[in-house]
Image 1 (cartoon, rainbow, N blue to C red):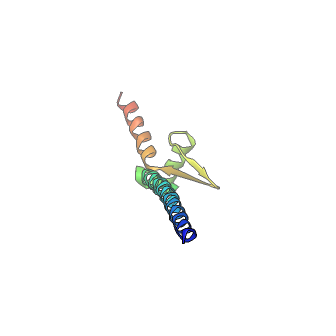
Image 2: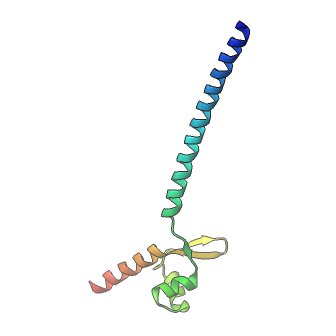
Length: 101
């Protein structure tokens, strides 16, 4: 009888340990996924050349000239150039300030 009680106690301790480990791992996983969700919400999608030129209200040749002159920040992804909306708008705002001064 003592052997059975000892085994049940050991099993309960083992179960408690396993539950604690699972809780810790689950908590760590949810914290990691919360951070990645927050980061993904902060990231903005890239625009292609056509979308960027439409956003700025200029033709593709004009946009290409702005790009070539370094007026617009771009990112090379593979063989293509991509643009962030916020950076495009910021570059135009800074150009407008320079013209108005």
